[in-house]
Length: 225
Image (tube, rainbow, N blue to C red; front, side):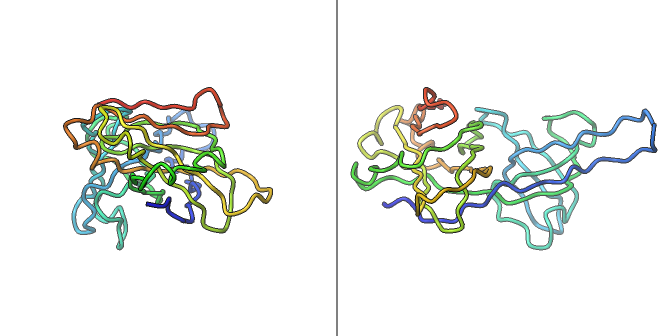
């Protein structure tokens, strides 16, 4: 399977939304949190439910927002989004009601399996600047800086077929821009769905290799069940 040609969504600029106090007031402002969450319930007529996974957690923190908080055309359940919200009780990263101020789409991509080792050639042509990476349930989330381009690029998390049956398979973060023209970096958020692999009883973890320009020595990530 060839790495997908796609136009990545740049990280949205979320405006900070907080309660306002009069000039010179010492009244504290409730903190607005920004997290990647997975949509669990999106019916505009019902409370919006988001699943927030702490790094490497299997069970989510369940956030419940007001009906219609995801808009009239909400994302499909299972979609990961970047949410700006405030916990109603002021306690971060605990299940309960929240006020969802705004949300934005991010890149949601499935784990792909390469047809053979030749499909992996060129995976490290264009390095990525890794800012952070973590497992969120059955997804691998990444915050990256990539060269900006208005043309689709090849970008995918490709599973090495020769390791697919290993206890800890290896996948490659494939990144290839359409041209080598000078550009500038922009920030991207990506959520890779690894559910089919993660559901296998034989799978104990996932190794990801990447060409990391932020720290070239950090070229392998290991996520374990």
